[in-house]
Structures are given as structure tokens and as C-alpha cells.
Image (cartoon, rainbow, N blue to C red; front, side, top):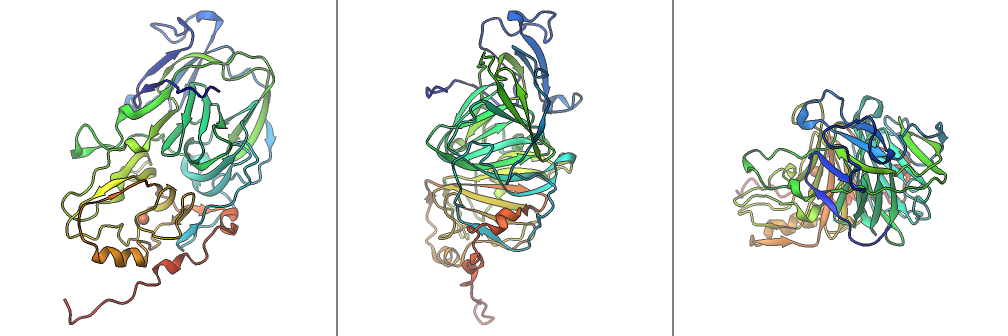
Length: 433
Ligand SMILES: [Fe+2]
């Protein structure tokens, strides 16, 4: 893949269209009797046909061969990739935290996947999973298609080059990428090696949260979501499709390169977003708002206001609240929180939470700033301060996340995590208001 900057289409949820050959995209209809250049028309959906127009997602591909032109799938073993529900995974009422695990990078994206936790049930289209990925090889002559859920990727080290049926994306730390459920893709490291996090969302598609009284701009702005332009490969050499289906992998041979979409039009598309463009809004008077104010994308559940998973970030920002304890407060949350640090330092933790590290605070597990951060924040001069060069994210989900046996046995799990709160001594004195 070329290292030249790629061109993207801008917007979120638009009906995008793109053609790599002039005239390849039918005009005025989707399924002409004879598409141009001898292409096949193929429809791809991410929502049921009858979903309301504003959230309906489907794309028409115009490709060299239709997707039915492939061999039969056979099971493909994978050591550490898990689905949901997963026997052997159990929720924990303890606060859990991991240092960045040491991973064997000598793999491609598929072989380097490790599941950390999951919830819900992929077959019932609810819940999610968190995976780590690491790689030092391209996927060469194979691609992946995930029928279980859409994939949100956050690269933490290195860069990624991603080929999809809609075209090419490049991504670096500080950006997220979303690949639609059911879309074929290939991921290659753009650097010697790369690693990061994946949210596999089994529920409704991720969408932008409403802004309410904030108005028509702010948070993640639609124009900053970038979708690739059509780019096809025309070769008839052997290829392999790896399909994730109901939590397991399968592989099938195909006698051509399946990235053969010459033109496409639709709303079911991959996209990327630069988290550094997030327009963070916060208190300019007092108190610490709920972290939901930093929601970039949200996959709703069937209960209004309760997310299957929210994608939340903690970006560089000013803290100016007056008379206020400024770090994140102590709390117990009905929702379950998986938090990881991409780079820099997280404002509630001074030590023990390194880039590439992650924590899991499941439903009602008490957590909050460590003792040192608490002590410092109680006496800090409340001048405007800026959090610089930091990027953490949270997958916040309505269902308890069950860590996998691998995650619970991982040497990177911090047995002493709770010690960060040990210094929180009794301060109560009924004689001193
Ligand atoms: Fe929390």
C-alpha cells in the first residue's frame, strides 16, 4: 500500500458515493440490467431493510465478482480469540488493572488478536468484546470479515494501513477506525509492528450522540469523520477469507482478490475519526460533569438512554472549575467501565496506569482517584490548568464485562492495584466543620 496521504470523504451517516473508474457508478438507479464495465451489483446491509430512514445503513457495491464467488468455509482454530457468551469467563466485583501485557508481535492482525473481556451474546446481537491486537506482518493473501459485530480500532503503538471493500484508510495513535459488521478488510502495520485495542460491538451500529441544549456544533463534529474512496484490486490469484461467525473463525478459499469493488454508494461504510479534533465541553462554573460529556460514539441498546456501549475519551483539555474537586470523583456506576491509556498520563492516576495499560471497573465496583491524586487535588490552587499530551478512552457498557481466563492469568494483571487507595485515611472530625 502506498504511504502517500489518502483522500477521504467527509461526514457521518451520509449517503456517500465513490468510483475508481469514471462511469462505474450507476446513475439514477442501483441495479441496472447491465452495470458498466461488466461489473456485478451487490447490496450490503448493516441494518434491517425496514429500519427508520435516519439510522438505516446499506451500501451498493459494483464489483468484478459478487461475494458468492468463493469456496465453502471450514473451521479455523484460534488460541485466544473468544466470543460471547464465553464459558470460563466470569465477572469480578473487584477493581482490576493491568500493565501493558508483553505480547508476541510475530503475527498478522488475525493471529495476534487476544480477547480481554466480553459481555452479552453475539447471537442475540447484544453486548460487546474487548480485544488486544498486535502484529508485525501484513495479512498478505487473506482478509477478514466479522459477521458478529462492527469493529472499532484504536491503535496505541505504530500505525495501521487498512484495506476495506470501500477503499483504504491509514490510522495512527490518537485516531479511531470503525469497520462495519460484515465488511471484508485487511489490516497491515504501517510501521515495523503495531498494537492497540478493539471494541467489537454486537449491538446496534455506533452513532453520534445527540447534543441536546449544546446546539448544532460540538463534541465530535460530523465533518471530521472520514470515509475512504473506492480503490479496487484486480487480480485472480488465490486468496483466503477468514470469517468470524458466532464467536468462531472459519476460512474459505477464493480464486481472486475480494477487494474488487470499483464503485460504491451507500451509508454502510468504514470511517475514521481523529480524537484530537473532539470539541471537549466542560464546566466553566463548578463541579465535574459526568464523563458522558466526552462521548464520541454511542451504540444504543433497546432501552432509551442506556448504551450497549459508549466510546468515551479523555482528551487534552482545560480544567477551570471553581471551588471544585477537579479529578474524576469517587464513584460506583451501574454501567461497566473498561478504560485504557493510549499515551500521556491519566488525570486520576499518578502511577501504575501506563500507556497500553487498562483497567476494568465493572458495575458498582467502587473506584476513583488514587490517594496521592486525591491529596494533591484537595490543596491545589484552582487556577486554570491544562491537561496536555494525554489520550485515554473508555468503553462504557450496560452489561458486566467478563474477563477471559487469559486476562485473569496475565502476568501484567496488577495484584496490588487496590494499594493506590490505601492512603485514603479517615479525615472526619465532628468538631471541625
Ligand atoms: Fe469510572
